[in-house]
Length: 358
Image 1 (cartoon, rainbow, N blue to C red):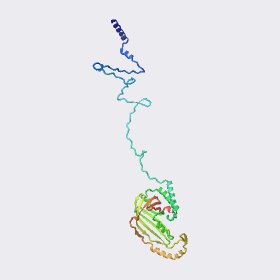
Image 2: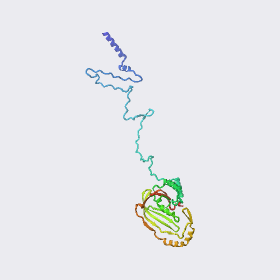
Image 3: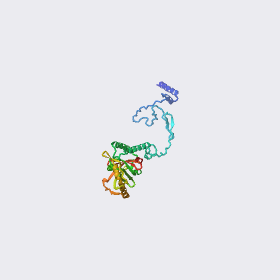
Image 4: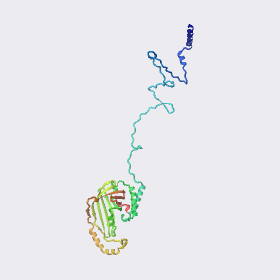
């Protein structure tokens, strides 16, 4: 047994002499593949008879959890700046953010501009020219129609079409609130389906004629004066009706008639008869009648002098619902007004002095 023990001891001693650093020898035995270090395996530990592992008091060595065995990166210092990478992967330095100032005041306008009230657009020159042409065409159409009483079906149809076009292009959307345009004396050019029919019929007799029907509006006193004048070969008669009005909407007023007035007749100094008249389609000459009336001209002149200067006869109108009506203005400008009454009547009027009356 001694020689065998001695030979084993000699072999072991020779190994120690060849490897002076056992630790280096163990390190050299490690195999590296691709520059990576293989993970260290933890073997299960058998418990001793008392249930306590043999290395219970020794802490485990630090283990690198990187699956490739690489060394963990060094922890950055608290004062170092974070390293950022640009889009190409190159390292960069995060620029410090500048403190933002207070936002400048902005407006609620979606384009950033100051909100401004929308002014009422003035009619374009082309539109104004179209209105002037329509107004002149309307005045020419109703000319010679006896204020609408003698208008044919064709004329009435043209008037309806022209009135509809003017009402659609009304430049004054609130006529009641435009006293500078509404106030004044308005001369009737045409009417249809209105309460003026009895007056027009009276002027359609052979020896009478409706000279003028007018309406004067005063917004300051809230009054309306409707006046009519009928002439005959012997005299002319004028009468009027005064009413107060109240605004019901920007384009509608309610009218309450208060008083009727009859002016003294103006007697003609001479009898002016037409040369002929038409009765039931037959023309009758009046030359012989004119010769018989010539001696009476002196008498008519004296009567006219005595009547002139007398005050008008005023008659109060009872305040009932029949004396009330309303008037709707559907078109208004400086020289033309179109209105509609509660009875379905249509009124086309031109302001006194307008070129539409020429």
